[in-house]
Image 1 (tube, rainbow, N blue to C red):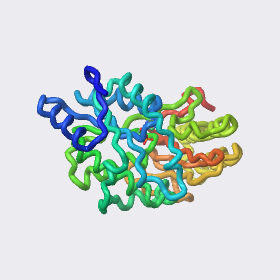
Image 2: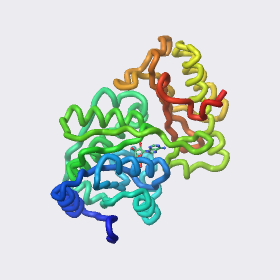
Image 3: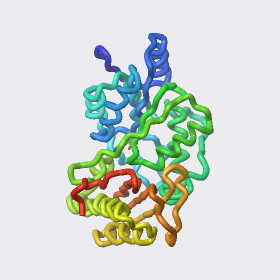
Length: 298
Ligand code: AMP
């Protein structure tokens, strides 16, 4: 499928040829990796990518190696026609939508692993997740060879892990982190939100509400880590959400702040919680981000 300046490729060879040709014409290649089921959060990344280069490549690939054995790989939504329309409307030039066999050729044996930053938070409950992410992103980098790649701060730990990988492996690629895009009521957009029933969607609002309360409490001078954590944990449990983790951590190194310690002036507050069976993640950097519900939150 090709129109003037929007096309879709499915093989490594075709994607590489298109990116090589664009570079030969003096274009700057920019990459937005996604798993599809695109929403406004993805769209904003694609739009932002246009400010960083002249060939905007979006990859759409549900990456099997970043899913655990009991996770939702097989039922993850794959609305490819709607996704292509989002990409086109957002100003992407090239969509790379490969098969699993293209990305993981039979007999391949290589994995990329970042230590340390992957141990806590999502890495604790999903011990193989980040290895899958860093492996697929490395493959995409090697195929597309972008000058810039954009990632959302919604997946904050993922962003930091990829920045660390790029720095450690000397990839000549600039990683840009983009703000979390939220629904009008504060819920962070996620491809998994479509799993939520109406009741579970209402309960999930406790997440942005709790984060907003913590932003304001921290702004008002609350520095007790346990008070901030209890505030969030209490709000989640009152809404019937089962928490996976709620942590305060160093915003770059992701080292946890002890529960009986003091919250610094700038500190990551990150959580994962289940509404029904759907696992949702969200975060704010206290001392930096506004409250997810806006300044009127109380
Ligand atoms: P995914 O398709 O979920 O793997 O996400 C692809 C990219 O979109 C990742 O860099 C995510 O961090 C980013 N993303 C997903 N949801 C949002 C959101 N609500 N706001 C900003 N970026 C997002």
